[in-house]
Image (cartoon, rainbow, N blue to C red; front, top):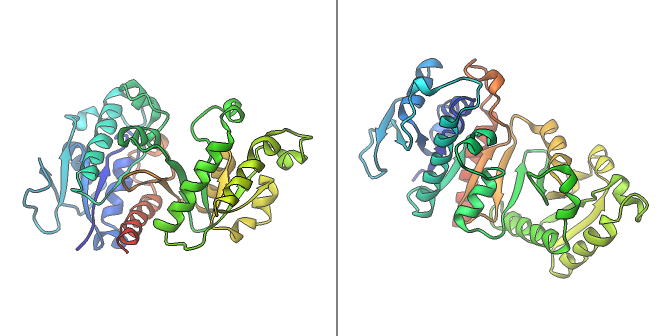
Length: 331
């Protein structure tokens, strides 16, 4: 039986609906899942016609409704219509629709009416205008599911990168690094590598915060005060953790090929090299979340919204990863 996956609309002024619709007609996806689109039937239908896609959408009020074979059910959670679309612009309507879609997909996951959820890209600014005051979707889902240990992890064919800190200003990174936080992140990643990805004995590389990983305190003390003690304690807990490594040399020498995952200290430190090597295939996975959630690793791309040129590769990979995790957890 094919897994049922809820896919949220994302910001409808961006490329979310486009990459979603292109993904579900992809041969890589079409035969392997039962998609359920969450957002606005009218807006999804508008984009089907705009992009001339061979998709039959059907509006449903609940998933127990009878669905014609091959048709894609759409649950409308917000009364936005095609008239609400402002391509490439920030709007409260798109933020409300995106936020409500996330909430509804989450409810379906918690009720086990779907097997996983995949979230299309959102605009944090639009979500904030709509009253959703979260740094990002990962933090929003962690709070709504009351998941205490959630780690943002990006996956591509080249590498897997987890983040010790996520959507915070760079100047606040140091003050948000604690021994216990790093150990918690390592435990969450280690567990997810085993349970979600099927890696029996995972190895994790930890990056330093400062240039040259601090040079034993000469260029910063975070490595000696926080990162090294955390690695030591993680090893005592049976985690195969190594580092801290200077980030530039680590990626330049392709040392990442020797590890199953990398823990970066801040957002850009880990995501720039990952996106440089796998932008069209990268996936955002919320490790430690009580439900399965994946997302493409890119944003709303307002500059190309509606131009029919958005690459669905990352969304396809996100759906494929969700399916893989569903199957792995059944073993």
